[in-house]
Length: 421
Ligand code: NAI
Image (cartoon, rainbow, N blue to C red):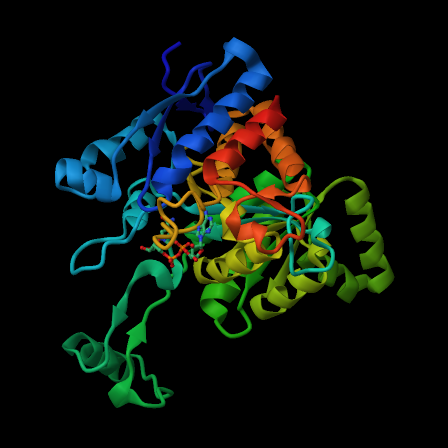
């Protein structure tokens, strides 16, 4: 078998020694990449000995690419992710200047990575602002290609804004713009196709992992035809495509209306007893409260791009912050996946040995799970928890932990490797 991961009939086929392209990244990317790879390699070795191994292949992006090739995102880099299907990256600085696209957005768009997946779990010993962090175990599926992020915006006073205003008033008979002369405009595209593929992926993930529920988070009370439609398309999809594996809150309400609350409750507990995934919905603002007050009520979260942005940061803060929050951008239809540290380049600490490599290491654990190498991922989770519980941490967590030992980026990785062994 070659060293290239293949995608066939909806499944990825992984050789024992797959080539994994990686982008080192800017700023602290350089500090965290090598130590993270050492941890990931140690976990694979502990799980499979000589039988399996990742073959790291560096591809260029960001400042390093610019210095070596004169371009921030060489074609070869995009081609490598296309060829090898699964890769990992450190943070990339978004160069400030006219006409330079965000490199992260370029990768997501080229590979149509429509799911931004963020698992949120707490590791014993990590300082948390919530009272019961051990109850936090959520998996965010954020739509990655649509919504207000499409970038369709018109600045007030420009010709385009005036044309758009004219169109709204004269063609669409809109008469609710409070200050038409000084308004800028943004367009929020949300499609049935885009919503369905995101929610389908979230439900499948819940079913495959035996998770209890999928919460559709939306602001459909205000944005009825975008966020409200997202919710309705989600329920339609669950009921049509996952009839036997899910029970929806909409069905609960229907039974309540027709047969009363007791019957509805009976149907719900029967569905739970059968291990069905409960598909429900919550308005975004209520979700932000609920996830703090009753985190155990939510497991998989399916949401639109902007909501997902806010939710990801709040939930990450609940379990220790961006230094240890992993992420992935995935297209479940083509198999393309790029795992990434969710924080930025942290220029204020780059090169000082203060960076926490946890986010990238845990992104590596997600990558291993994606390959089906769960045993190796478990080694990482266990060793990291062990390290935190001994209060041996990098500077971001050190100041919040009484009696902790301060470790550098590299020492923290070494400690995890020792705990893997
Ligand atoms: P940032 O995440 O780089 O830094 C925010 C704060 O968190 C800083 O105080 C930093 O020191 C700290 N921090 C971040 N990662 C840490 C780690 N691993 N360990 C310890 N402390 C850590 O966000 P900022 O400053 O807004 O962005 C800096 C640059 O990063 C920008 O150019 C931005 O575009 C880029 N960026 C890239 C991302 C990516 O490639 N996925 C994501 C977010 C930002």
